[in-house]
Image (cartoon, rainbow, N blue to C red; front, side, top):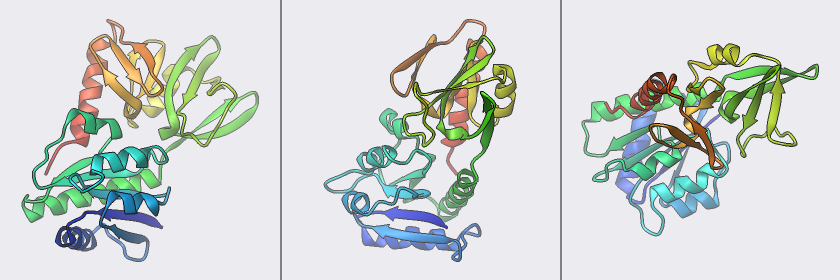
Length: 248
């Protein structure tokens, strides 16, 4: 089942968003549950870690939509997040929780409907998340792509560094793979990964800040952007976020 959450402290907006989701051609009542909440606090008290999609008002009393999603992200890194507002536009800090879309409540109904279509499609895509098979010491492990923080070139293959929230654990947070970095790069190029340096392949979704010559990953990991990779890396980074945050 897909678990969809709608959180808004204005009852009429809550109802309209729910109706808009149910009208989508990508909505399936038999396989999707919709849960409604009138505050971020009530959602967090009842939060299911398997939430797949959340449409949340940015301006709510006691706890804002952004503050609510910050708490959600501590347990759930894969949920599709859509901020909704009548007046607030995206701010730099909002990118920290990786929202997929923004809905302006006064937008044309057809534009909102198209955005909801996109959200449901992305929700389904993430539910069927890609995994890669890694062979280490004769043992094969299936790793969900979203759990990878970055991959580092090693002498006889590479080291796959996992995020702190990954359900797959290793003693030092790394999984040794005999696959070459270039091979995994080819496999992951459509999954939001990019090359900032010839020795690294990074998960763009796990980047917390970026400058011309350096990126910061979750866990305060710093990785240099080399001169030879700079142009292509920044192009891939901009393309990824441009695709995610386009409207309409």
